Length: 131
Image (cartoon, rainbow, N blue to C red; front, top):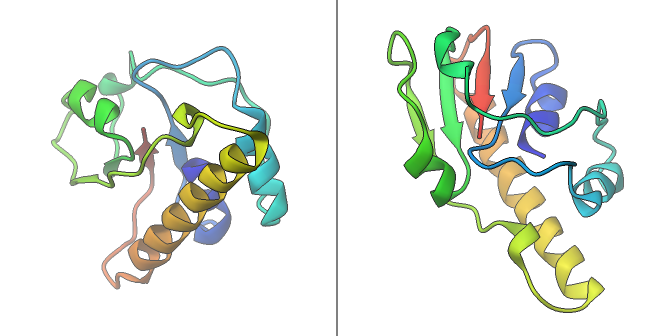
């Protein structure tokens, strides 16, 4: 969700990409539904691994869950690194309403943090990776 939110709100100022330390086979359907609920376009690609991305140059690296932070490789040039500890909504147990609420909460947290990031006057990156 962070990649889609950042690319949409960044309006061309930033090119975000996402990757996972332990990606699953497909993007969670509730992540896609939540993005649509908030009118955020989603391009429809499969989850990708962070493996290999450490060879690319990134302007910023942001991890959004604790497991990703711990597995984050060292990137060339040591770009600025931020960690946003957001609970993984896909890990929530319970009924459909509880799961939807978890995805909505994660979306709102990500969206707020991205708004703050984009408000920084010095932010003029070419690329960012969100894990």
